[in-house]
Structure formats: C-alpha cells, structure tokens
Amino acid sequence: NSGDHKPRTLEIMLSRGFLRPLLAGARSCLLTQQPGASSAAARLGLAQARPLASVSMAQIKELRVQTSAPISDCKKALEASEGDMAQAFDWLRQRGAAKASDLEKREAKEGLVGLVVAGNEAALVHVGCETDFSQRNDNFVAFVTEVAQAAFRQVPPPPSSGSFEVSLESFLAQPIQQSESTKTSVSDAVSDLVGKIRENISVKRVARVAALPQGVVGGYVHGALPGNPQVGAAAAAVAIGVAGEALATEAQLSSLRGVAKKLAMHVVAAKPKYSDPGSVPPEVLEHERSILRAQASESGKPAHIVDKMIEGRVKKFMQEMTLLNQPHMIEEGSPLVEKVLKQAGKDLGLEISLDGFVLYTK
Image 1: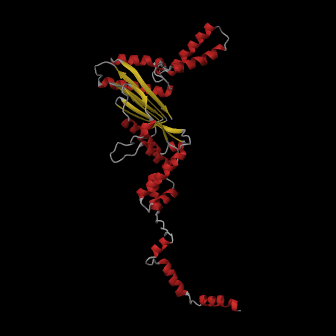
Image 2: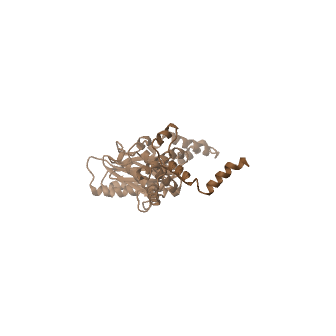
Image 3: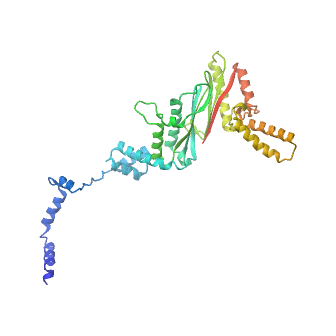
C-alpha cells in the first residue's frame, strides 16, 4: 500500500538506529548555545529561563532561625535571592510589610506592657498582638522591651513634674535603637515583626513620667515575665515630687523610692483613674451625677433626701476613682494614700507631693 510506505520506512529506520546520530546532533544543538543564538532569541521576543538557585536545607534552617518565617517562605526567599542570606531576609521583610497592611484590620486584643525606670524618670509602652501565644513569643517580648527602651531614650521627659501621653505618630517615626549604623524606625520594626510572627502588631500607647526638678519615680510590673522584669501584663509608674530649694539626700530619696514603689503596686491593684478630685474633668463628674440622680429619683424620696443620696454616692465615686482618696492596699491597715504620703514626708523631713501616675494594662 503506497499510503503506508513512508511511515513504514521511518519505523524501520528508527528500529535499526539509523537516526540516532541525527537525533543526538539535534539534541546537542539544543543544549549548546550557538553564536548569535541569544540575539536571535531576543529578536523573537524570547527570554531564557534562569534556573532556580540550589538551596541547601542548612541555609533554610539558618534563615528560619533568624526570621521565624515559615520554611516554605524561607526556601522561596533563598531561591529568589540565589542563596544570599541578607537579600533573602530583605525579601521576607518586604513580604511581611506587604502583609502588615492587610493584618491591620485584625484586632490586637492581647499584648504586653513595658516599663523603664531610671532616676526620676520613667517610660511606659503598651504593645498589642492578636493571640496570647504570640505574646509569649521571644521575638515579641524582645520587641516590647526594645520599644520601652526607645520611649525612654528617644522621647524627652515632661517639661515639668507629672505624666503625659506621647504622640504615637511622632514616636513611630523615631529610631528604635540609638545607633549611627541603624536607622530603623519603630514603625519599620513593627513591620519586621509582623513578617516574622504573621500577626497584627501595634504600639497602642506610650507615656512618660517624671518628678522634676527633684523627686523620685517608682515603678511596678505585674505578672513580669521570667528573666525580664521590665515586661508583663500590667505596669504603673508614680512620680513623687520634692518641694523646696534644699536638695534631698540620697538616703532620703532612697527611702522615698520605696514609698513610690509601694504606691505603684497599689495603682496596679486599685486601678485609679485620677490623682485627686481636682483632676477629675467636670464633664466626667457631671455625667456621673446625672446617672446617680436618675437612680436616686426612682426611690420616691423627697428632693432634699435625693440630693444627700447623690452627694454620698459622688463621694464614694471620688474615693474609688482618685488615687489620693483610695485606701492604700499595700500598707498595713489600708490608710488613705493621702495620709500615707503626709506621714512619709514627715518621717523623711521632706515636703512631698503626688505629681502624677500612669497605669497600663494589656
């Protein structure tokens, strides 16, 4: 059959090996770059595929230890950077930064509080994360510590005794470390951490406390982590000022630091909102009065009795919400905080005052 002649001839040639040299030559031409081949490919709009770099498991493990990123991401990063560890780290960082904007929509309900106290100044920070698992992560704990130190180092103290909240926008732009070679901002460090632990991380609050021109600041961290007394579930700092032109002795200040430390412990336990009745905003007090008035009016008692009931409850509100009017929970017998401070000043021969405090809980 003439229609089957050519296929039959080709089949015989293949079976007897007549075409092997020809096929081998063609294969050699495909694998060996010929002069002008790349330019020809360019003219045709073709690009030669670059083979992925060979990445060892040891490299993947090393990058995994450094970044805590998933193994699959570490492998991709090393392949994309042809095994260069620094470039692979940047690749992961860029990927983490891209994810940070998506994760910002997720609420950071958990977290830790950091506190740094030195001399007559202190800094407190509250850093949030999504899960309690992440708040125990070594990278997260180290970050909270670093942020607290940056807040103490980079943010100037108050112009006078007291406490104040720091602008988050300005703080996030500050360098997280005091180094000429490192210019990473707090905001960039947050993005780096997001890339490592794959959760929304946010610096929620930052505050500074100082007792100026002379005085002490006492601090206390509740639920401090093992090996890291600066970080825990809650923290407070209390500023006690010393009035007068005469300088207090170191012995006097040392004793006063003990008073401030106990008062900071009380603040964490009692959770006051204001220092004294005079520091309660008028709108807060009026709002409380309106609620109490509505409650008392339902009693059906005469107006003058209702007024006395309201004043009694307002007094109780002041005791609960203002630090000086609270019973000191750490001192024996729970005397009022105001009396404790007066007695301490008398014992030390100093005129002291409560200048401010800050309480942060996670």
